[in-house]
Image (tube, rainbow, N blue to C red; front, side, top):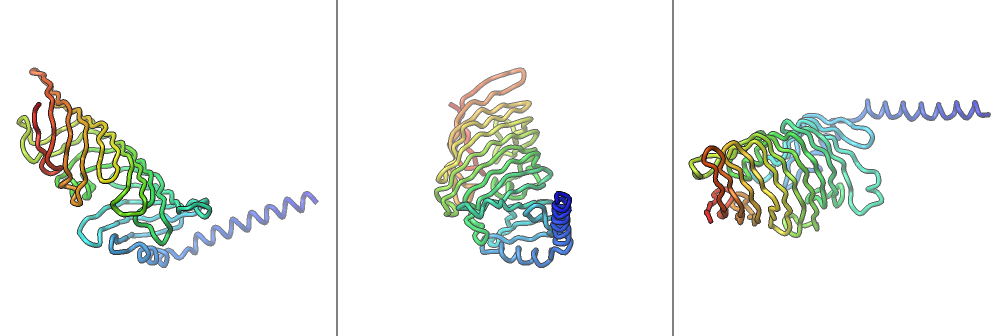
Length: 274
């Protein structure tokens, strides 16, 4: 009797395995790709991808993805690979949760996003993302947001919670670590046309249109910056208002420290010495 039960179990497992293999091999990738693009495309975003394949256990693997803005030339995301996995517990939860992992801009990322439903993916209700070795110069959205190109590598973590409105009552946190990069200045500061840094760290929270900068430290071969304060977000992010203060440390033979406040906007910061 036990032998018959074992054979039945093995035949069942074999049948499940063969079914999964055939479903994978016969997966209608082109049809699903077209339907996914059409489902995501909206007045806000346009999704395009080169290829789509199933990804075990309950996901899709997208290759060479581009998410562009339908109303402008901005490209919010462009990645080499995106693996999206449906959390089966979502069927018993308020939101639909998707696991995300992939490669983009020379680095890697992973996390999850919570959606109101699969038919309403924007705006996301919540999100968590970790990223590593992102090449900032390759991300065109950062250049569009800041109004100038920043170089270097970025690693860190980001969280987001929303009430469902696109730009209101959202909150979250960001921890950012930078290595070996540059940031050009709109006007020369202390004889420098750009900030060169070996490493940097930012810890911030955002809520209701205000970014509270708890820590912004930049370390370079010539100048170190130790700042904190707030950034009031504008509809055009480049015009967001700065209200930062802290200490600038000048290195070299003539070491010096000075207190400074930074006002103006992201594209046109105004430095004042105290």
